Image 1: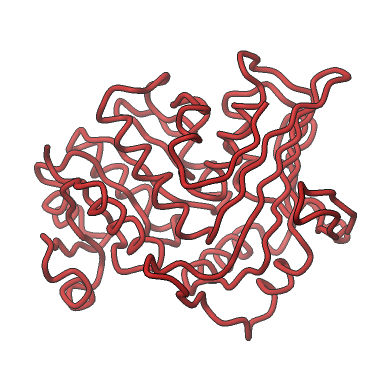
Image 2: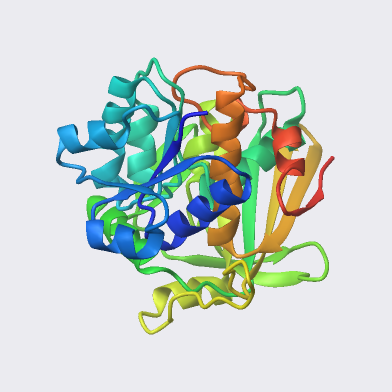
Length: 328
C-alpha cells in the first residue's frame, strides 16, 4: 500500500493522526511547512516539507501517495491548495477542519476524487451520530447536538482558526435555521441541557455553532440544526490565559472528557444518540484515519465531496471508535 500523507504532521492533532496511522501499521509520510520541525518530530519517517503556496512542492509531497489527511489550519488557507494537489495526484482528501466558512467552501466544490471535510470531533462525530439516530431516514424536523466538555484547553491552532473565522464573519454569530446559514448579532443565550449520566443537567451556551451545522444538512433534509456547548468549556475557550492541553497518559491524551449528545426530532418522535470519550483532539485521529481506510477499501456510499454521514455506514464507523456509545 502506498503511504498516507499527513499535512500538518507537527501540529497537535497532526501528531495524533500520524501516531494512529503507525498504530494501525499503515505507511505514512509526514508533511508540512516547517522542514526542521518535521525532521525533529518525525525523523524516522519519510518527511516531505511543502508550503501550501508552492504547487510543485505539494505535488512532490503527494507523489505516489494513497491519500492525504490535512491537519494544518487555518483551513481557509490550506484546504483549497491541498485539495487541488490531491486532485492532480488523483488521491482522496480528508481534513479535520472545524472552520465553518472553510467547510462551506469545500462542500461547494465539485470533485472527481473523494473529499471528506470536517472528519473530526467537530463536524464528523456529530454527523455520524445524527445519521445513526436517523437510521434509514434522510429527513428530520430538527437536529440538536450538545457538547458536554469537562474543560477545553485549546491548541494554538484552534485559537488561530477561531480568529480567522471570527474575522471572516466580522464578529457576527451564525446559526442554521430555516434551511440556511444565517449570520446575526443576537445576544448569547444560556439554557439547561440534561446530558446522560454521569454528566447530568448542565448550563450550556445555546447556538454555540460548530461544524455540524455545515456537515449534517449536506445530506439530511432538515431546516434547523443547533449546537450547544457547556458553559465551563466555552469559558475556557474565551479565556486567553487558558493553557494548551497537557498529556496525562501514554497516548498523549489530556484529562478532558466529553459527551456528545444528539437529539433528532422527527414529527412527534425524538431519537437520541450519544458518545462519550476522552480528549477531543485525540479522537479526531481515529475519525480521520478511519475515513481514509474505508475510502481506500471501497467502503463508501457517496462520491466526490461528502460528509462523514453521507460517505460511510455511520453505525459501523462509530462502533470502530474508542467511544462509549448509546445508539437507538
